[in-house]
Length: 430
Image 1 (cartoon, rainbow, N blue to C red):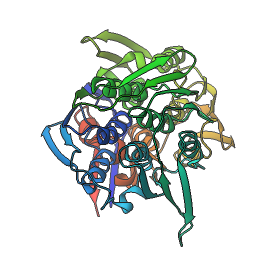
Image 2: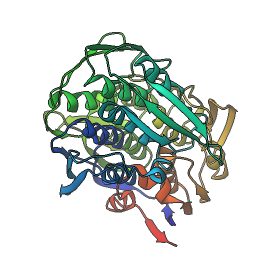
Image 3: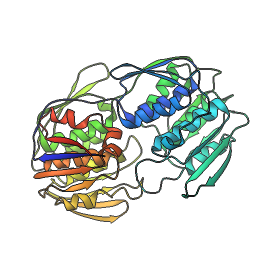
């Protein structure tokens, strides 16, 4: 068990380099199962969810080699279904991404219900709906713990007209991976088009797929007979960048956030500037930008509603909840996408925030209020990142428990990288 001891308040100064996106890396790693040739992935974040996805591929017989600090080479040519690691699947939600490529490659797959962060009720109904639209046969049974085990078979993989019941990122990614090697054409309507979905498409197209992003949240796929090996660079993590932008607004002293893509953060940067954040955007490369941020005072209250991309990201409403505690007045945060997404609010209240959870989807936070140290446990990855920043804002020593099951899953060496900017964070192993 790991925990953080965070001493605050602190000021953050210097340069923070944004890592590759976990949410892009995991589906692209899964998609390597569709390619019977080596693939080289660059800018891969060394976080536990990525390690687990790589371990899942290795349990299937894939050959994995780290060929650089953030570069991994994957060869899935020797893959079989004999030793799929069921226990790993139960620990990570993104393991659901194996369904599409394994069903495409082998015509069938058996696996338990994936686990992951607690975000309320997150059934597999949307995934099962697209599988049925492709013609798959699905047999589900409950085990002794009440968890669902799935057996999915597909006699022949043909293109199909797919309509998603909701804007689900992982269901969209599974539909794309099923369609790539299908016979004929596939149209996916009501498709999620988040940057990490677009990055998956870019990777697959570089391997020889024929995928187009169309207007009105539609994706079309012309099936091909095979895919070739490819080299691909994972996009920067927009969620890490957004969290650090909030940190800079509250704690920054000439803080520079580097190697991000501002095109993924349009609504986030717009909101921050409306609130009163002091942010200067600069371009550092063909596809990379930097943000220079200074601590801001007299921040204005705000309203945000989480929406599918290009709307406000659901995973950034937690850092904005922290930001609201330091704004002048009442802020409203509405997240209709997941139930129980407000589980972090009571923890902020224990730190001194003035906040009310109206229902499972809405909270009102009134500021500014000073925050004090507290011992807490984050309910999920992005809440964990927010609580680290909260600990740096608060007065005293804040303890965050169960770091390896939350923060480490989405942030690489976060305490080390923040300490280089002036934070005071100690990791304790028990």
